[in-house]
Image 1 (cartoon, rainbow, N blue to C red):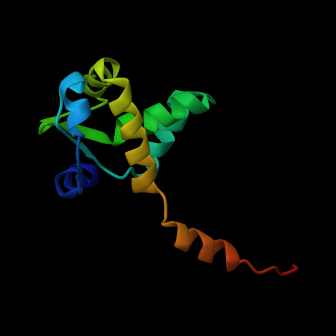
Image 2 (image 1 turned 90 degrees about the vertical axis):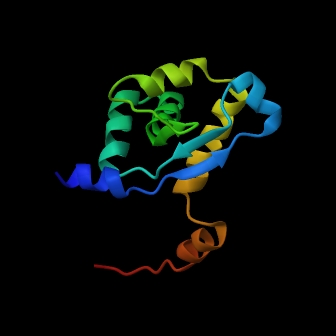
Length: 120
């Protein structure tokens, strides 16, 4: 029940496909969400240790719509969409996934510089 409520309130990040890619990709806008830890775990299990497959599974799971049409790993629509997708747009989706899930560089630096050590 909580997952159903989350699905209705989940923020979808919309990305406009560059015009130079729209014609070959056949899509003008994609929508992506940030993944839950359970979704990430499912992707890790699907990838079975293959890092290239992991990146693809994470990006596909985050990809929830194209031109307003819903995509889902559950019904196979995202897999079909991904297989037919222009390679340049696949790369942009992978980049968007990384951007959505990474802390800004200044936050990363601040976090790493905050390290302290203690014994025991």
